[in-house]
Length: 180
Image 1: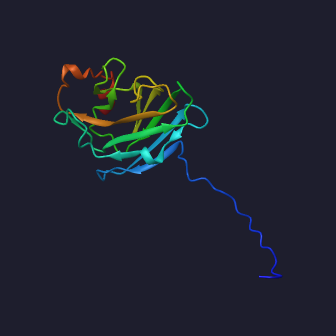
Image 2: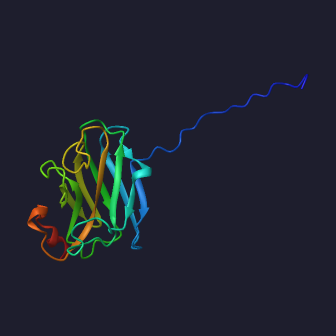
Image 3: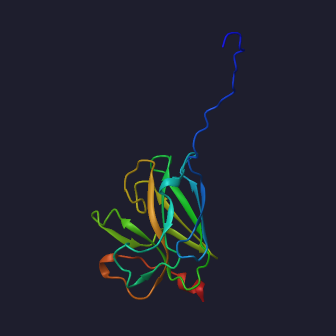
């Protein structure tokens, strides 16, 4: 249109949410809500929202005749972490009554690529909170590569019998004492 004034709009590109250092997710079993946070790993280390969820334990073979996950399995991916850094993951579960352990699933540096259930490093339990450490590329990081990405599934379990010897699970001293 001739003579029409130019219109200037103040537009700004806004990036899509890139994840955060904290997540809150309802459990798939209907027991409540999981709250999780990560510390360490550098300023940009955060949960990838597209690869972070609490899932039903079905399909996580083997050992479902021995391990029960009453709240499901917390599967997450941390991205933007400093390569080779150590993070502390803290999870707050709806209820840990009757829980006998917290176990993670995946390959370990000594399992020759085979996934197995094991107790995470520096496991601590305080009330309904569970915390542990993972170093990028080491025990607990499923891709076992120091690449700034940490992948991990795990959750609180009720263990109804001994694990097979080849699972190499490590007992946590004092865990059962907390429940009494």
